[in-house]
Image (cartoon, rainbow over all chains, first blue to last red; front, side, top):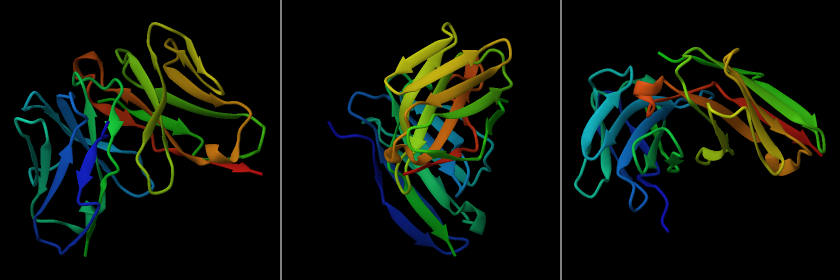
Length: 113
Length: 114
């Protein structure tokens, strides 16, 4: 079985640019959550989508947005990039949208210069 | 919201010894407590979890204990091996109504000395 897949694996962007990160959940999982992990810290919750609807968002500015497609894959968009957005962006999938048994993808390493 | 504090931030142990990591949480309604292991450059992987209706759970060399009254839970690794070297994160959901939002501790870097 394929796990959670994320693309791209690495990305370098300039301040002010926009970026789109992609995630495909485990087959059969209906929920995708996005987390930001700054170097040396634990992951921070950004969004969760369950059955294609936003279920909640964390304490992130409106520059961060996401959506979930009919096939349950998801995109995370970040506009007007800041240096502080440099981080590992992790996608986690789960079957029923609870925090139980999250499976994380390998992440996208975003560097803003 | 949920605040999870994790201690210690770094832990160095001799191979074969035990390692213990402790976390405290603030929301008494939290009902699920997972532990993740993250090796350098890799994804966090769930290694063990516990629900609020039990006090202890074991899986081979790993165990987790939960004290709901004191609102803390701990990870115990016995007979440590070099492959146990990694960063370990505890987490707790932000209450029953937000059980999909996991709050993570800051992590503990465990180094097992051969």
